[in-house]
Length: 252
Image (cartoon, rainbow, N blue to C red; front, side):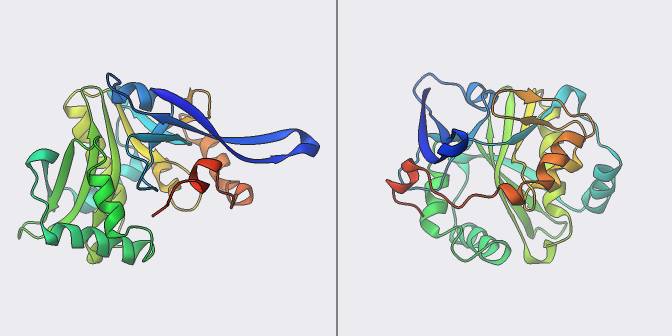
């Protein structure tokens, strides 16, 4: 792995200097090593293939993973209604329907500009996705997809999409639960559900004992009290600057 930092901003009056931290995947690297160091794959630029960024991510230690009361409530809503088929990426057929499903989901659930076709193609060709999981109802209709990064010891749910009728139904949380259960069943050690920040991704704190990365190490937080306190202050720590790497590379 090649590590580098990119200058973000400064406040000289308090000697505060900000840098964004990146890691470049190289031949011989293992995915578990790069996730262990607090990095997640970055897909915001056409020139970001193999590039990872450091952020406040979460992870579950799967040997101890059990559903708490909130996760059981969500699981009861969807367990038995959808079946999961996990297909290796190289064996998965990328149909026009599959691509449009993703583009429509991000346009509807996030913004028209967040996931252009070029970015989705970049993600699918990034080189680390191992499986596409398809969720279908009893009638065979697709309810959702997930793009998963997995090796022998870890699973990361990189992106997910689902049908309009499942918006605002906790289906997204159920997908995380189901991926965690599948990863535990195959003997993986950690499940990484991605970033955990206030507003858009703090629903992941519905998992009990979600470890989180603080920039130096993974912290265990049995009831998510420390992590919850952090997510509540994220709005006032919001920044609008681009770091130097992003300023010098085209963005999607």
